[in-house]
Length: 244
Image (tube, rainbow, N blue to C red; front, top):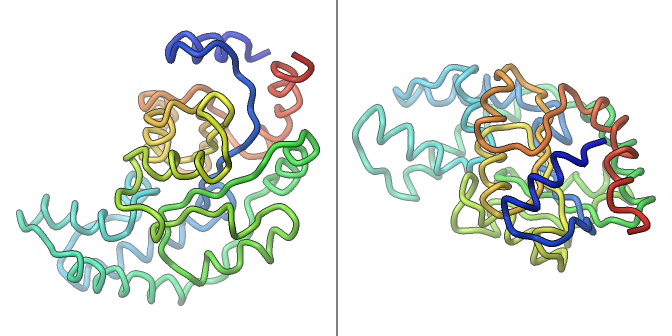
């Protein structure tokens, strides 16, 4: 199972073998069921500045650095180029709104998936566009033994966020692996595009309201309808490179 998708990936990029040594996870909507809170926070906070972003639309920008999302919205709606400082001040308003939200629960099935990955000897890397320190600081404690701070890439580590491949290229470098030695796990179109652009085998887990076609159109190699579905398929996927 999954031989076809792996073969297509190798042929597309001209790689000889698929030998994963690391799995690169997005955070919001992948590790935590936090996107509904982010979506509402984006809508409420940007409305105060006169920018219109519906909660549904927020999912389309998921994975981008917050300041880049705001600059994009301002360019489209105001035809204005915001400075980094202006966008950062507006993003702080969004962060403050998010802090009012209930605590996001871990995504169902993700810890069990991570344990399978660890058992198979693969590294776990987190690659997120988030710049909210409150979220980043709790990753290591809440995923005790599974996530380590030295293998976290955030908006503070890159100049260009998703859909630029830089975050995932940085994740590969930190893990010490090549593109054909990794798997990206994403849930959003911008993140999928970034993983594909980094030449990494990209798994999309559709945990939000977007149609699966949006993930397929960005080039996802595999698409699962939920995290438990991906968890339950991990052993079948890993059979393709074990003992080879």
